[in-house]
Amino acid sequence: MPVGLIYALGAYLSWGLVVPVHFRLLDAVSPWAIVAHRIAWSSLFVALLILGLRLASPGRGRARFVLHKRHGFLVLSAVIIAFNWSLYLWAVQHGQMLEASLGYFINPLVSVALGALVLGERLRPLQVGAVSLAGVGVGLAVLAAGTLPWVALTLAVTFAAYALIRKLVPIDPVLGFCAETFVLLPAALLYLGLGPDAAAPDPRQWALLVLTGVTTSVPLIWFAAAAARLKLSTLGLLQYLAPTCLLGLSVLVYGEALPPARILVFALIWIGLALYAFDAVRPGRAAVPAPRALAPKPGDCPG
Image 1 (cartoon, one colour):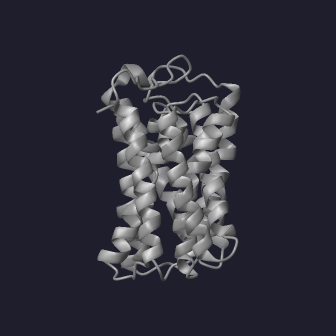
Image 2 (cartoon, rainbow, N blue to C red):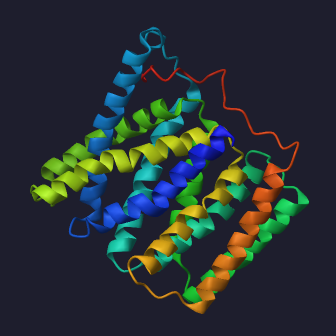
């Protein structure tokens, strides 16, 4: 199995199974406080991770990191992913989980569109059919919602934009996440110190908030590694795994009802995904190699 596919599966399965359960346990904490804690503890986690990589390979840690003009886009990607996470948590805690899940179903189609328009990625006939089926499923989901789902559309567009930036910026996944996290760290610490949620949480909440540094950092690092190795269109369609896992979790674990219309939506999306996957693994379909010329070694840290 290609390495990029393994990274993508790890990221999307984490977002579909591990992260929702984790945040469900933090319902009593405001979404802004959760995001601030996530940034703070992720900063510590990624710093320790880079230190561990340097200790494991001392020679690689001495290499000098060379800034490139595109690295400035990491500031934009940091702001975009922070906004995406904040909106997702707000939707969950304000009874708009349907719109949130719909957003992550629409997102792959936005990624496919950006891959074609910005990166010039071409879809073969079978892939066009796969995307069309998925698009019909998403269209039915929008009709079932009854109104313009602005939360869903915002979630879809912001995460697709984040994926595009991480695809375009030539940087090691760990270093890219390190840069994004430290860009957001001052604002997060300011909020935790002076914001309305400055009061210390109870011991159970404290432990869960500390754990966000790992459960949200690792999938983003895996996602960036997958983005460097896979076509954006492939990465986008694989994202259907996360909301599908979320559906299974909601129905099987939390006892939420599954309307018949939603079953049809999932059936169309999964048929499309199966067709796309079949076309991707056919003989002669080479994986997109990870960028090498400008990518720093894992032991280096932005300077």
